[in-house]
Structures are given as C-alpha cells and as structure tokens.
Length: 199
Image (tube, rainbow, N blue to C red):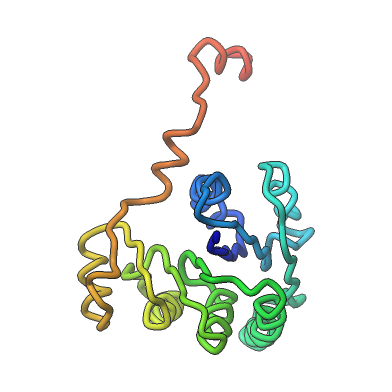
C-alpha cells in the first residue's frame, strides 16, 4: 500500500526548491503525493502563485488561506493560529502518513505542531542551517526537534542537527535542492538570448 506524503508549501521561493522533489514523489510507485498550499501562494498581491503549481501539473489537495492584511507581529501570530486550526482539519480529512516541510516559515511551525499532535511523522528539509538576526532560525530548530527524518544540505548542518539531539541514523546529507532546479533549467543559447533581448 502506498504511503501518503503530504507536502506543505507557503511561498514561491520554497516551492522552487521543492518542485523536482514533488515530481519524483508524484512518479513514485511507493508514495502518493498530497499537496497543501498556503501563505503567499494564495495572495493576489504576490501573484496568486498557486496557479504556477497547477500549471506544473500538480493537483492541490487543499488551499489553506491564512494571510491577514498586515505583516506585523499581531497579524503574523493570528495567521499562525488560523494555520494551526486549518492544518488540523486538513490532516483529519487527508490522513497522511508523513508531513514534509522545507525550512523555517511561521506557517510551517503551525503545520509541524499540528502534525506532532496528530502523531504524523515529519520529514524536514534544510534543518540545521542558521539565519542570523531573524526568528526564522528558532522556528527552523523547533521544527527540527519535532521532526523524525532530516534531509540536510551540508555536513556542518548535519552535525548541528545531531547537536540538537536528533538520531544521526535519521539524518541524511543530500545537498542543496536548488541544484536540481539548476540542472533542469533550459539555458538559452547566446544567439537566442541576443535575439530575445534585441542586442
């Protein structure tokens, strides 16, 4: 029986890193891909980027609208609270076997907390990294502590996840996900680029 991996994406930037992994999960005979889309993907201001996800051939299982009008601490806290409630409803409905999260956004910590309460194992990507001067780092490390399987991008980050007390047998250094995007980018020839730019 296929395992259901529920992937959560909240921004275009993190979706760009996830895209080729999502394609591999979608093609897999071992896994069923579930996709929850939230955050700025659903904002007209940020270009309704959920449409790009659909254009890439993915089915969106749930759209979770959490954004407030402002991005001050009060609004972000309210968004996180709404996210926690809405993720719980989605998990109850979809019954995933795993939750997959990349990074350190506030909506992802809400997804992780709900997953922890539902006893759904979390797969975390990009753990162990640092962001000086932002609360992102505390969120990332908190998600790491709630996670069961860790895919990190460097041995330095692997060692930091071990220092956080995680089982080294569940930590895998797989390199940066941006490399997949670079490898799959179709680069224009010099002549085509000159033609397009009219130079």
